[in-house]
Image 1 (cartoon, rainbow, N blue to C red):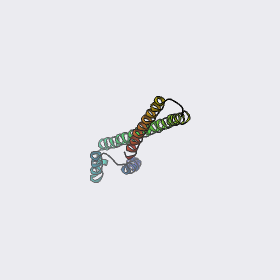
Image 2: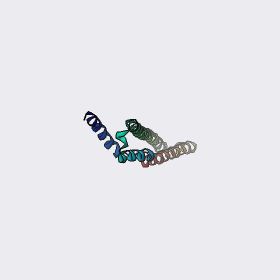
Image 3: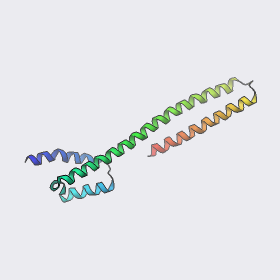
Image 4: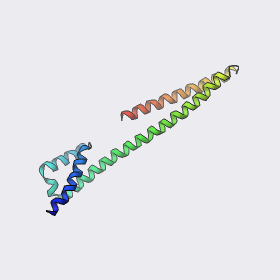
Length: 130
């Protein structure tokens, strides 16, 4: 009786873990073990499967964290580029009497900022898809 009560909490853990998509091999083993009743007969196997499920969950969690961290870095870089672009554009508008060489330099810098921004936006879109 005590053995059944101890297994009940772990069976609720299994139900929670079933909601998460698993690696196909681990998922197949877990399904096989549940349907054949092996999970109750071989506690070591059960622990191994549950450990692997948790490892897969942690792997997905770390990947999601890395993506989120990179998205925040991209957002900060975009804000900085935007501020630089505003400064360059204002300098171009204010200095209408500046030599042409200076204007060409500023326009070149502005175009480089736009290219950086476009590459960051493309990377951000790629991360959002992942």
